[in-house]
Length: 179
Image 1 (cartoon, rainbow, N blue to C red):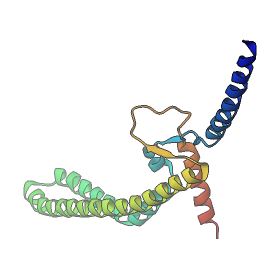
Image 2: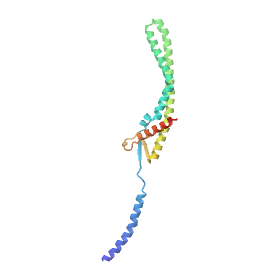
Image 3: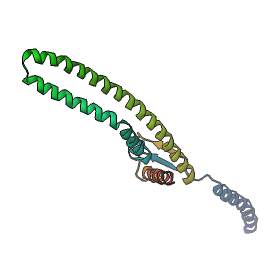
Image 4: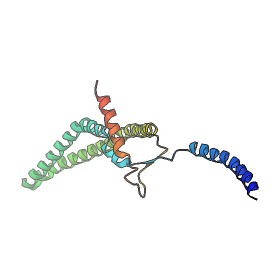
């Protein structure tokens, strides 16, 4: 009976060798594990050099109007102090000037606030596009399959790529700043 067992073993070996070869080929062709990264968008928007530069640009753009508004507010405070020392009839006359200046300050402040909001939104939109492009380029360059933005319930520091994106944005900002 031993002899029939040997041909069965040979037959089994002949069948198993191609199966193992197919299994090895299948595992060699198995897709790479999925790479997932996390980006804290709030931190990017707070610290990206493009956003910081936009804030400085807006500060310079509105500095003159802000200074004029502060000067008017100081003048209004001085008029209030002066009014307290005047006689009733003189104080009443000064009150009209105070009221007119107060209305002017409020209009100017509201107009400046509205324009600043519009300009801030424009700068943020421009920066947002640059930041998103940097995230996408980084993900493609590094072979990421998925980038998850904040807010999320939990992200391990191991998958947090925010600092690497910030560094990339800084390099791009420095490259763009040099003539």
